[in-house]
Amino acid sequence: MDIQRINPREWNCSATVFGDLVFLSGTVADNKSLPMKGQTEEVLRKIDAVLAKAGTNKSRILSATVYMADAALKDEMNQAWMAWVDRSNLPTRTAVGAALTPGTLVEITVCAAKS
Amino acid sequence: MDIQRINPREWNCSATVFGDLVFLSGTVADNKSLPMKGQTEEVLRKIDAVLAKAGTNKSRILSATVYMADAALKDEMNQAWMAWVDRSNLPTRTAVGAALTPGTLVEITVCAAKS
Amino acid sequence: MDIQRINPREWNCSATVFGDLVFLSGTVADNKSLPMKGQTEEVLRKIDAVLAKAGTNKSRILSATVYMADAALKDEMNQAWMAWVDRSNLPTRTAVGAALTPGTLVEITVCAAKS
Image (cartoon, rainbow over the protein chains, first blue to last red):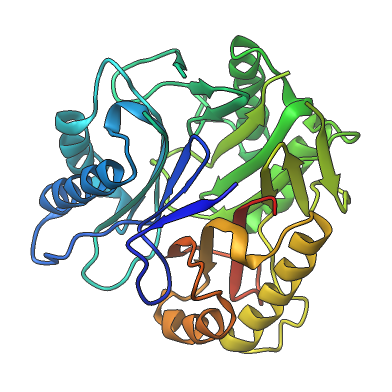
């Protein structure tokens, strides 16, 4: 069964599609001057765009992993998450603190089902 | 193909079931006064309960990710893991240190196959 | 559907194979005296070997997660990654800093499709 690869670039691609499953890379904001909430909003917009390219959407997310440069900012991240997530179709989520590239406050990866 | 969602709550659910696959959220202990071993034991009991709701059990775990607030306590976490894991059906596991919510010593997420 | 378990040992196995999917454990270098690039090279060789045992190879990786003891060494890790990865079949990847076992500089886990 073939693997579809979305947006291949230097060392990874934005998403792989295999059968009914879609795997995304860790996604970060381009605008590093934004605070946690703004970076999370940008990341979630990017995830929407990649999911659309993969033929699915946020209502079909199976699991999400959120890495935060400062776990104390979890509530701020969560404000953006709550405004974005499909509350009728809540995914699983794991959110932990991790060391990220300087300036990056949040990195999110998801696994989704095809629509 | 439909996605079943177990225990939806505010921002995530305990597990998603898609076809033969089950994805759990990062699971933490409620009793933050417990040491690493006790928190791990509570987490693993919660994982058993969620897997049961999803129609599977620990013998069908494909992968586990363990996040520890203090990676130096890995041996203590591992004592609870070894007492719990199905040694005839060992899953893959990744265990790393990460910043967790204050008081939380361990957070575990698993992906399992339906029975 | 049965789960195949590759290299079961004390508390986990090297890989689980379920249907068309292969899940690997977090993989680390045995030679802790190596710098980041050398440890990454050793990890990637081990991943090649486990993927082969599971009946697949690096061109079929769906997602990779890279945990680095020092996220500032990401470029060095990436040199080994770039020399190894199948550039015609780029997987998704998430790379973050995390606390690892003393001496371990990098731990990598992948999910792959069967060939």
